[in-house]
Length: 164
Length: 99
Image (cartoon, rainbow over all chains, first blue to last red; front, side, top):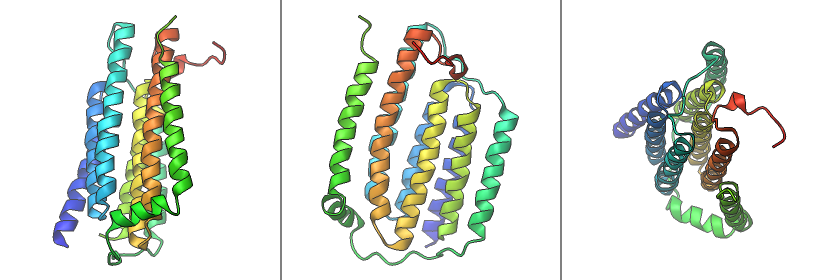
């Protein structure tokens, strides 16, 4: 139990710190690497919630796939324009005010609602339950997702096709 | 840890992502902010799912992660396309509706 609390706090602090570095950093490439750290810390948060499969998917797809894509995107665009991309912020005060106000509202709302403080015991293997759900209750969305990925692949390669 | 801790963490991360999305001028920077926001929502989904003892939220998170990957691929393709036509990645420069 204490290990779980320590792990939660370690991952939470890493996640918030890396998130702040993503939005406040001056270097776009460093922002992407901090986003990778934030995504891996999120995978750790999923582990404290006993969702091992989602943590693995998070690391493989998100931290692996998305970060690789973004790095490729930066490299290709910097090549196209031939100079370093500018990575500055504007309206920092207004944006900070909006974000802080929303955070205050959400945290206040969350603290006023009676919420569960302990997790229910696991009825069995969560990964097994998810696999069963995916191929019984959620078969149609699962198949539609495959079609969506195909459409995304075709669309992305159409948009980024070589100029003719 | 109680559900409240997870929801608070997700709310804070969401607001950090929102801050990045509204303040960044670079389109890739905006995309990174959106990633943070989506990530915070996934934490909420998994936390509610675990505390309710129902795996629907986790299945939904899987779908959300897959859709995010497709979204990033398309978003970056659009950024590259904008670079070709406009030579700029600054969102404020992209304010025209026809090609």
